[in-house]
Amino acid sequence: MTDSPPLGNVSWKGVGDYGEEYAERIHKFIDKIDIKALESYASSLRGNQPCNISTEFSVGNFNLVRKIQFHDGVEWIVRLLMPPLPVAGQLVETVSPKAREKRLLSMQSELATMEFVRQNTDIPIPKIYAYELNEQNAVGCPFFMMEYFHGNTAEEVSQSYPGNQEGIPEPFREKFWRQITGSGPYDSAAEFYADYPLALGNSLAEREGPVDGQGEVIQAFRSLAASFPPPAARAECGSAEDFGLANYDLNPNNILVDQEFNVLAVIDWDSVVSVPDAVLYRFPYLMGVRCAVPGVVSTERLELKREALSQQFAEVVEAWGKEQLEKEFRGVSKRRMYLFTKSGFFSKEAVAFRSLIAVRQGQDWVNEEWIQGLAWLSDRNEEQVARFYLE
Image (tube, rainbow, N blue to C red; front, side, top):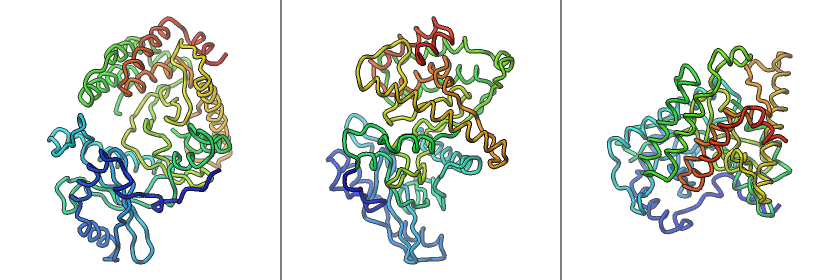
């Protein structure tokens, strides 16, 4: 391991540490924020306890985070919602009413999701102390005030290890995977598969404009999904139809860890969707784990390594699930567990849904791969699909 990165807000940066394109957006946003109003708001929540807002910050695509240091030693963070990302290199000066409504709904959804997950799982989530969703407030933007964790993202800690790290360093890989394992108002999977792809297609077109192959992937998935087992058939096979929450932005940038990769908190919950159980079988994003596009056999060493890790990940998750089920039987755990299996990660339904994750990348060559992959899937049964991935 190289020198350990400084933990927590010590590793945060100033505007000068960012490239010109990002710096301009950050500069304009920071100038807009009324720090005194922010400090006054935070202070009022704790009986007028004085506090200071850090000058250093952490920034992502959508939020800028600063630390709130109270004079009695208590530490919070404030997550400030930034303006939309630049369009064609131009900063967005004003937000349309439609975009503003969408941003509001996204924040409301994230708050509700975080509270639901907190009450129904053991996933570590920052406490929300206060929030302001109105764009027109004294601070100058919507914000959340949240619990502070003294850690770094898993990506930052991974980069402190020698070698060209992709994902989590091998000594900590299984430990980390086990920690991140866990589990819309639709009445059936059939209804979800008919509606969700169309909503996704409309969202992508609105956000980025049409990309070659995008519509074809979505249509190919919908056609294939029509062949998935109906509710009655699922029940006969002992697999009652159910739904769970999937966080499709669960990646090393959104997971805070210490130097030993103990997970401190999952910090981003705005990409959560209610999905059929089969779709819960997802591989962690940007962690060096990749499931092959169906029917595509790679000979590249890096791709083969990623695909091998996908099988290892599936094995770890299955083993973890069996341990949790045993705890449930012994009365140690009171939570109802969904038992993942290795084979479930490579079912026809789970594999097919990954096409809708891939299409969000907005790359025509990725779409072309999945058009062919979905065609391959449509001509194979479950046994043939399992054989392709597991033999």
